Length: 82
Length: 455
Ligand SMILES: Cc1cc2nc3c(=O)[nH]c(=O)nc-3n(C[C@H](O)[C@H](O)[C@H](O)COP(=O)(O)OP(=O)(O)OC[C@H]3O[C@@H](n4cnc5c(N)ncnc54)[C@H](O)[C@@H]3O)c2cc1C
Ligand code: FES
Image (tube, each protein chain N blue to C red):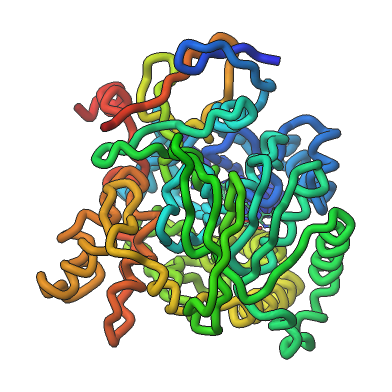
């Protein structure tokens, strides 16, 4: 098991999992808020194509949660583009 | 430092793996590049934990043998987590860039595969609505079941492994909704039966679904999704549809995930950057055109570009494997005969063509849209805006619609919506938007550009 934080809360994931997958296991479905409407978005294509899973990871925005492997101590935050 | 290889293969799925293997066995020095964390592509996506992977896959043995052979081959260098974001031909050399590396070669094989075809409908941007491929990638690549109560919907044989995978690993599949009629494949049985392994695979999934008491419904589709107060999926509207995809009646189904796939769309983005000839298939998908040796048409002298697998047309893993092998031999200028491989390719191609006929997507899906339905998820362009561009602003082509509305100009670079924009713009000449030259195929950060000395 790996510990990471999402919006400041400590969560657990399995090593080898993507950030989006580890979030889903913890019932966290929202990765970002859309720019104009502010509507929530989550994992959609799951393979790096759609960019709907973008999150802020260790301070860096626009990273795709479905392509980023979860690491111990990773700081993950929802990305609010609104 | 620029990394050079005699042959570079982009994409480590069935097509790219086999291309690399055949080219290396013919004596070439090969670089195999993939954006993913592990080799395998979509079909052999895996967690890296052998026990989990065995249980998730049909036919994983074949995949692990091929991946082991590629990894062990001293003539093949594998580069993972390396998304090619720019491709161009400069001074008779193909130059490829990832965010931190530059590659060069004179012989390239493109094996970038495909992604799920998505149709827009009201609520398709609600978290919990995802592609069937996403649900499959969560399971096969992460060992994660997408939700607590999952609807699997759309059309085509791919719905079966997705639903069977979820239910046989303890997930609750509340329904498999196939848009085609029951036994729609029966008239084509004579072609299908020539691929007995695929038929048996399908029967295996159906048995597994029966065992888990999962119901399969035909002639139905998800036409709207509804969110709870937190903005998360809580139910979908399911419609009984006619053969044109028009709604006859509806009912509500509770679920927290709707995994939907309308077949696949080839990833041709590199073809645009490299100026490769593209074509349009019967189902309206844009493909990279290749000749019998999997060679692409382009105007660059001195360099050779081939393509294999689903970027040349969707057809499943057997077809991708055969195309990859043929491309590998041709690119390595091997004397070895590929006549047996050509037969395999022909058979798999016929099978794929028949599946497209048996599981069509009819134009009536446009009647599911409301004015507020998003067409472009990235730029949040609504159906109303697209209609205005067509009717009031007199857009003369799907491409005009794109520039007037910004449809397809967001982060995903049009991968999700371009095909739908082409379909919504009904022109008599069935005008399609092809992949065009984009200096950057995948958005990268300004920091990465600066590192490259490009800013
Ligand atoms: C999400 C998803 C799940 C699927 N699951 C199954 C399944 O379970 N069973 C089944 O029979 N079929 C499945 N398919 C169908 C699948 O497309 C084919 O079976 C088969 O994998 C196609 O092989 P391929 O080699 O042509 O492409 P793929 O297997 O798609 O491989 C293409 C590879 O190219 C890489 N790539 C693409 N662009 C770039 C780039 N710019 N830079 C670097 N790398 C790049 C991708 O990361 C990928 O690994 C799935 C398809 C999708 C989209
Ligand atoms: S879910 Fe589509 S890019 Fe991650």
